Image 1 (cartoon, helix red, strand yellow):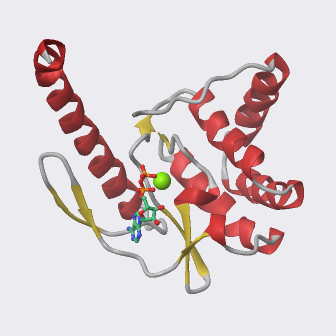
Image 2 (cartoon, rainbow, N blue to C red; image 1 turned 180 degrees about the vertical axis):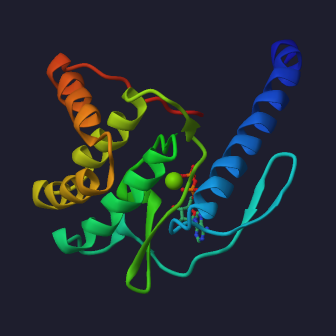
Length: 168
Ligand SMILES: Nc1ncnc2c1ncn2[C@@H]1O[C@H](COP(=O)(O)OP(=O)(O)O)[C@@H](O)[C@H]1O
Ligand SMILES: [Mg+2]
């Protein structure tokens, strides 16, 4: 009990800064006209956003034809200096015929290629190889630094060890 009391201020500060970060990233992505929920308001510990009506890419029949748009969206996000942090079909929603990115809770503004390579790696690990190939092709077409990021991805895979950050 005592311990949890003592860490409370840190916990609050962390939750506040995560909320601000998520809202900031969502705002930036919206400004770039990416397919993301519209940011509506920011609370101390929560972000209010548009509710999308659709299904998660995780829960539908996945075909390579769907992944071009997903690769393009991620490329534009990366070009603007944002890594998503949890880029899997569980955080992509099909709305009508379009694909929207959600869940920016682990996103970060970064100049580094490593975090971006990990976005690609997570997608690669989560979908059929033909879907990933379509995704990576489109990503490469829409990103100026795709070469560097794909090389980093190869490096991470060769190293055979990587850690995916998760926040409890
Ligand atoms: N803007 C949104 N519109 C509709 N449903 C959403 C929206 N954001 C999240 N969801 C739903 O809530 C679930 C959890 O939200 P998410 O942001 O992915 O948080 P986490 O994965 O960290 O719990 C998603 O898988 C999705 O089903
Ligand atoms: Mg999620």
